[in-house]
Amino acid sequence: MSGDELDAERGTTRPASGNGNGTAAVPLTAKDLKSDQEVRWCPGCGDYAVLAAVQSFMPELGIPRERIVFISGIGCAARFPYYMQTYGMHSIHGRAPAIATGLSASRPDLSVWVVTGDGDALSIGGNHLIHALRRNVNLKILLFNNQIYGLTKGQYSPTSPLGTLNRTTPMGSLDWPFNPISLAIGAEATFVARSIDTDRKHLTEVLRRASAHRGTAFVEIYQNCNVYNDGAFDAVREDKVNENRIPLAQGQPVRFGAQGEKGVVQRPDGTLAIVDVADVGEDALLMHDETLDDPAHAFALSRLAHTPTGPTPIGIFRAVERPVYDELMTDQLRAATEQKGAGDLDALLHAGDTWSVHS
Image 1 (cartoon, helix red, strand yellow):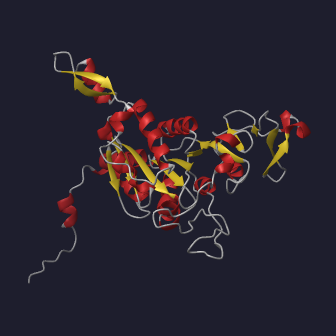
Image 2 (cartoon, helix red, strand yellow):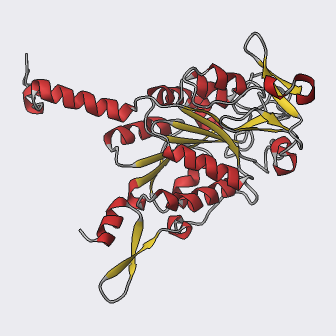
Image 3 (cartoon, rainbow, N blue to C red):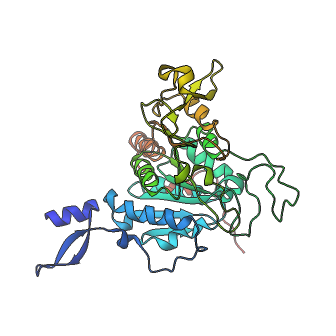
């Protein structure tokens, strides 16, 4: 196998017209990941920024387009597969994690991504989401959280703040909202992170880490719906990065503020509190460790802010290793074959009592 052929097999290149010897290999670019479909979201929607970030970083993975699959459910974010020049499937409401589980388990050579929204994933799709997380299927789940149902014109969603006013809740929503990060950690997800659509550098780095994780990687992305819920995440946008963003950096004390004057400490009961560093001293600050096997640390961080209206943790909450579902299944099938030999489907179907039905 030639060097170019080997590179192509590994997925690091694409064919292009070359030097008279057939074809030459050139690296994939963001343009190669863009489909010929017109991107049709509302002007100003945060989905555009997320799409651009994904298309820009994916060539770094060295995976050919035919081995990448994006699966979505229903909602504004669910149009994502149309705009990626990869394989993809626009599936049904809430079921994307279930469909992606089947694909990942049967085709471990693929890079499988789920794109979903807060309504799609946390309402009708809630059960599918938590079971994919607990099984540690080799998936990357991107949850676009805009705290509203955008596609169906602005109904409150499972993450809408208490008291949300709209057409379906003219006197205010009575439903207590989900905290997606807490939910994922509670379901024993092995990789849990949060980013925001307007911070491309941070989002790209989180996506890199998620793509490298073996198992289920869950990334909540604060995504602005400028039509039905505009400004929901203004408290943690770029101009508030020092005031309200609590950056999570591995092995570093959890602190924030323009001069790092604010910090996070752990109370005796295990909960966390925001304090002035000058009042407690640097040694009292909580050290972030995303690799802790016990999820209590990550869960406590997720409870610092239920909704992003003030200081809110941004970054990777948890990144631990655990056996991956498709690998466990493969090992089990191999062991069964070694013990009992290859299965015979015809013999199985005709085993025991059988009946012939004649019209």
